[in-house]
Length: 429
Ligand SMILES: NC(=O)c1ccc[n+]([C@@H]2O[C@H](COP(=O)([O-])OP(=O)(O)OC[C@H]3O[C@@H](n4cnc5c(N)ncnc54)[C@H](OP(=O)(O)O)[C@@H]3O)[C@@H](O)[C@H]2O)c1
Image (tube, rainbow, N blue to C red; front, side):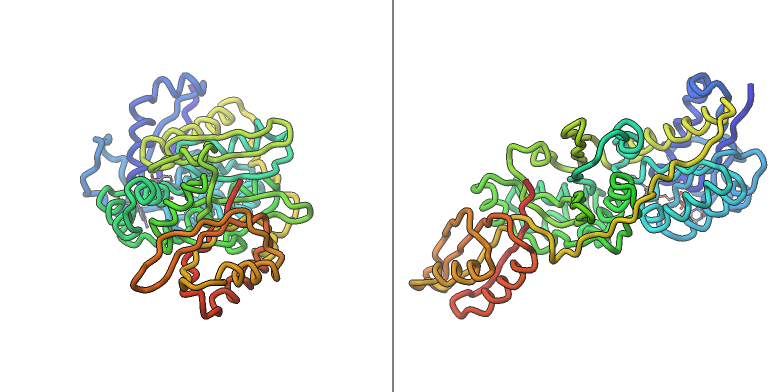
């Protein structure tokens, strides 16, 4: 039986589980592939560090070349994370004729197109299913099972940390800072949470999803991004009264000759499936013109769920090698579609305004919105603070253009009767 050699880069949260699956299930996996799949070497920084699973001696190495250029390794699995040296190691592995599997959203979102070209030149495969939503198979369905569809829209909850924080704020009415601290204590958020709470991680994943869905390279830097740190617990209460939940959504839509691509908090209807995705779970909703609406739901983080998709990618490549097939990474990014500027996007909006308790305020607000052709769909007035003599007005609009809404916000903020524009949240239906 031919042996297919696998080399791992990294033995952390994901790498440990991948190594364990490859070692413990070796016989069954080899049977499925029709060739022995052998884990030959694992690159780490510190070979003396204690590891969660016992590994056969001699497997750990600290010299990258022992994996990247070893003749007995066919598939290199990159699980180091971050941009460098992971990107450099992937390039070197591909240039040495190795197939590559990775879970690295940052490298794929920023450099995936160039890496796929390099892999194509060297006639090797590059697979990255785990880079979006961890254990949920979504990239392969997008590229294969949904290939006959024109994709109209993607709406996704792809960051478990922020979804955990938003769920806590919604269910327990606690402030953002308290919910973040709980996420950190439970190991769901990093000491520096910026990548998650500012929407950077979600934008990397959206860049990958949108590129594959619309067959065009979408750079993370082209994606509009707003994080969750300014959300206030009272907006969850008011949104609920209006029939909505608040989620950090990654949204991409086909818009004629352009696409929309944006990551921001959004109000989603309480009766939608996305509204029911709580805690660290992820969900990706896809609209295809033939298939209709699909929702992929599951664990979007964790070593074991991620090992499921990483090992599946390894097995796909191993099967192709065993069958002697010509392997070429699918590179169907053959369109060039620009991302629409955020100022041109049309959607519904939720405003929360603190206003002076005086006659005529509502008329002033309606006049500013009317001048910008923003039409109101619902208004609720809340709590009069008798000491400060202020009230809260919440407004839900019909679809309006972002540019007009931003102009209206600036004009409202300048009105003497408006104490504060407390929140502006987009609505996604
Ligand atoms: N964790 C998740 O739930 C999850 C989910 C989906 C995707 N991912 C992606 O999976 C990848 C790995 O994440 P992780 O959570 O497993 O990371 P991690 O726990 O931090 O593990 C990183 C591993 O890489 C090794 N490493 C780091 N820098 C290195 C270097 N310069 N040279 C050699 N080895 C190096 C570390 O070695 P030492 O052990 O010696 O320190 C460690 O074993 C990332 O791209 C991440 O985005 C993670």
